[in-house]
Image (cartoon, rainbow, N blue to C red; front, side, top):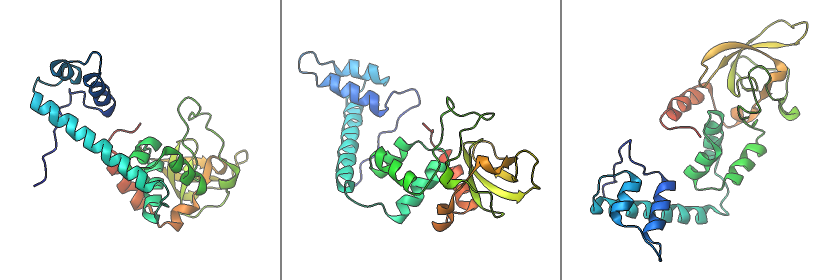
Length: 223
């Protein structure tokens, strides 16, 4: 019979970092804390049985993750994993979250994104709506088809091409796009602020996949 998972309450501090810290304090050889103090640090009601279950469950997760990472160390990524990495990333999931979900190092996630020319998201500190980062030359293009997915430097996310406008005297080709993610709006983008994402079509990633993933990502926070 499967064991019931410990349910946590919103006010309880049962994140992995805090659990790791509390377990280390409990196991300190010179001056270990009491279980009552451990409960206080975790912000849970004093209950040694529940505390033991929480610690046991955490240790099991750590051991399982360690085992999976070891198994995956030299294992190539499957097509499914590549598709999930790219979909998650273009919808705003952090690389560390993606790596943890697949039991892989962050460096491997970086390698996949680089291999398939996925433009890197920029932090708000270096990227702004008014002054977006330059699109890498290898994914720049002046030609897009209606319905094609592309990367927007201005919005720092994936967009769908809705149509091409006449050449602007200053900007050149300008495209009408639908911006996914937190914006969910129509916009106009000059060609040099868009990046080609040919790999999405090759992997069979469609607008519907992006929309479904967008809704799914709302279920957990983005780092």
